[in-house]
Image (cartoon, rainbow, N blue to C red; front, side, top):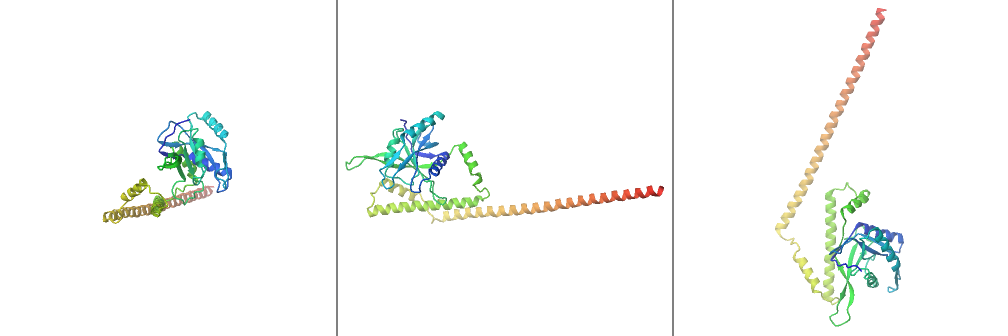
Length: 316
């Protein structure tokens, strides 16, 4: 069993591609999911980089969440084959296409604790569309939840920060794959505005989520968690005060600078286009002049040849 303590999970592009390929090949119904094993290289670190994965045969009954099957022998055999290719690889957890935590996930998690002390559970949402907010990855780890009222403690999932990252070689490969998909002609300003709109939508979604949590606490549906409430308070304390005159002035200055840049860019493009037009007209004139000179020289040569023929005939 390998140790694995982490505070953050970074999922690499190869894992995402492998999971999507696994789900597509399995031809599962939209409500069903696939499960697989997650691998990494190198010693344990606070930031867990998941660099590889492989599929594991799995099945479950939707109407009976407690009835499920995972092939242990296949998992161990595949891991041994991966070790022969790359001896540094080790098991660090498992993945599911979710899209949410299910009742049997804690039991499956316990199986992977045989291979690593603190496995990561990563939900990769393969159904997330282009308009969805955020990344399609959620990471969890299991912790021992101690009851204050003397009840028996049990394990539960704790959310971990997660992101999609890549090493330099992977970035080159991803850019090569996306070369035919990404539109390189899109203006940077358009891309920037689209990113800001997506960020604002995500911010609104998080605000609504916090609002729902606070309303549930007030209604008595949830127990108050002082850490969560303190974090919400900190978020609003560091938020921007949009009513200040200084901020409005700074936004206006930034907007004017961007507008001026766009205007100057348009002027430069227009000047360059006019320059190219004039240059093209000058080149056409030079070509026409050269063609007229060549035509004139040919005519002169023909006239001289005719004169010579006439002189020869007169002499005869």
